[in-house]
Length: 409
Image (cartoon, rainbow, N blue to C red; front, side, top):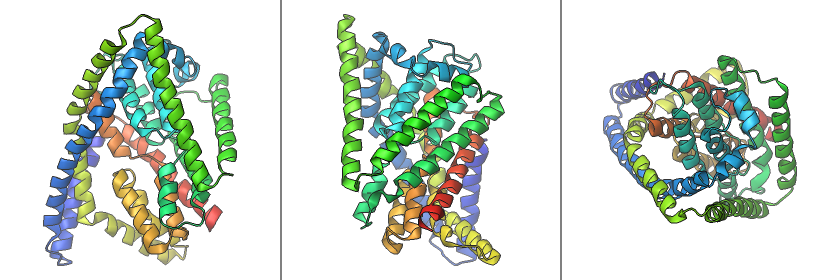
């Protein structure tokens, strides 16, 4: 599936470039596409190099946490739930701890910690199957939960809105949480339906009720705060929890009489090697995405959708947010740039500006996550993972449009 989409990106970009040159007379189109290829190839290496320090640090800390049995203790919190959603993973397996840490970091919006924990989770799950070239059901569900992950504190969106002059930068807080929750739930239900996992047993139901009750409580509290208060408090809480985790890990290792320094260095070496090994996978995915952007194909699609919607007589205001919706699964930086451009051109408090903000916070960068996580375990056959991830993305997009009309229409 991933191979077909990758080829479709490249061929679609080629056809769109030919259209731009031979029909629209934009002779620079081929040059722009090839320039995008070179730029994205360079960016892939820069991303991998940028990951070296982060991966080295967190995998070093994780090595100490595992050796001191701290991760095993943390994993007990979600083990009953994860063992029912991912029955391939036996109780007490290290993957449960890695998944727990990744999901916690994602909820707190700690991307710098979530990615190393996610890579570690994929590697831990990779030890279970005999067939190493294909994703397991557990890995697929984990990927879907990552690409559609509920982020409790979308601080970056609030800060960009404040910079662009929004009267109340956090007025999109609840719409974003509703949209990203819809994305996660749809991704979870679709994937579990395909895998024939029962979501309605007592344990899963109780966990889901507890999780969403906690989310509702946090939303009620933070939605009453001003933009600067929300940013300050959420950043304080998230970073305090992260710092506490690091200190607790080191203390736990010391109490177990472990050589924490040597363990940290051992884990950090793995992070360095892993970051370098990701480069081919990042280059393969990002140059195809770069071609797609530079060819103008996305503009053609958006224009076509606008014309079709206009013929039906429906409200076409949501079309202004479609570039952001189409870009988000492909490129986080590209989607962020489109969100800022929309707010600059139409106003941060315009319908389009608010829709772009909600879309930005509704899902993650799907193809980047797929490239990094599949690259981390050297898997080329993604089975139905891409379809499930994109289904969750679509749910997030539709939910974002719906709640934006509901709150701001």
